[in-house]
Length: 181
Image (cartoon, rainbow, N blue to C red):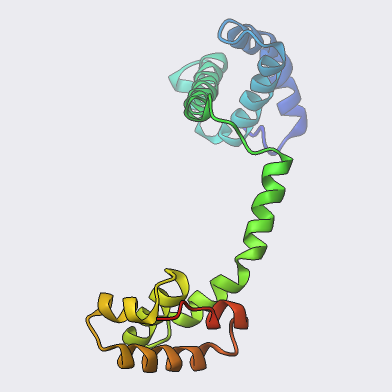
């Protein structure tokens, strides 16, 4: 069959079999729009796979029913996946426009912090640890030194070095805010 190469042959094929295919589909789906869509999909699939038809193995309509079965089965599988996905989010409140606006505000507000964290990743471990404890976790230098098991003066030196390294990246309020011992 040369359905994909000869429009007249495809038209004749379509006219011969459209009613039978439509009957096949409407026995399996109840939505008329879906039935029309699936019928069109079946003929598109038949056109794409016309080279697989072997007259010695059965009639055109039998082959076309095989194509139809595959297309309808694929649609049922798709709908089942969609139902499972819908079930997973059922009962959950989806984000509305106000939620999205608040989320965008948070993302914008945290942009500097993300840049600072990226820059902090390049710091030596000791400096980064002190900086995280003092700036992010809001510990005093004394508390940070105790948490890291180092002397307070060592913590102050590391914090100073870390701040110097980050001066170009973060705002003064983000880097220089620290609790005092």
